[in-house]
Image 1: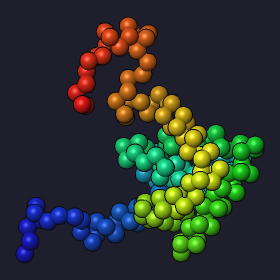
Image 2 (image 1 turned 30 degrees about the horizontal axis):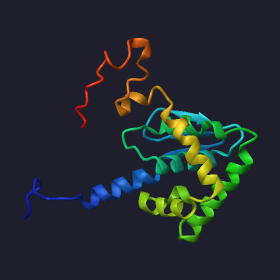
Image 3 (image 1 turned 45 degrees about the vertical axis):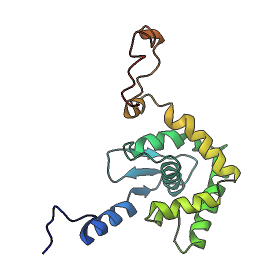
Image 4 (image 1 turned 135 degrees about the vertical axis):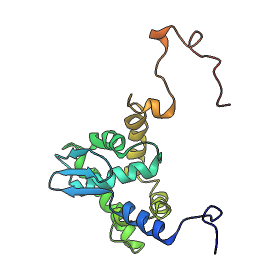
Length: 174
């Protein structure tokens, strides 16, 4: 019999529970997207809820940070839920779902493994839709002040006396 402390990897039970949990990340309803792991929801006005859920998963796959909650990704892509942006986003997500179907999946959200989703994204990374979403995420995700502490960034320093007097030489990460 093997010792539990020396065993590496995960058990079959752990693998199955994580796979099921990964597959049921979002609850999509008429006009809203909610996360099953946290207490947040997002109403949609121009996009279909399924499209918004796919967009949030796409955002997480483009800039994956396990310590950043889905709600921040939802805020980052909320700007695409407008009458002007919706047609292009719906077409882009339809292309993403078609690429997933070409790999044997029902749609992009039904892909349980991140590696499979990333392979699909890599195949379409030169498209205008992908570049628009990726570019928008740089500011949409990383300009949220609520996200900054998760990355160890304290914000601008000018109003607090500048970096020279506030840890300019604190480079414990190097």
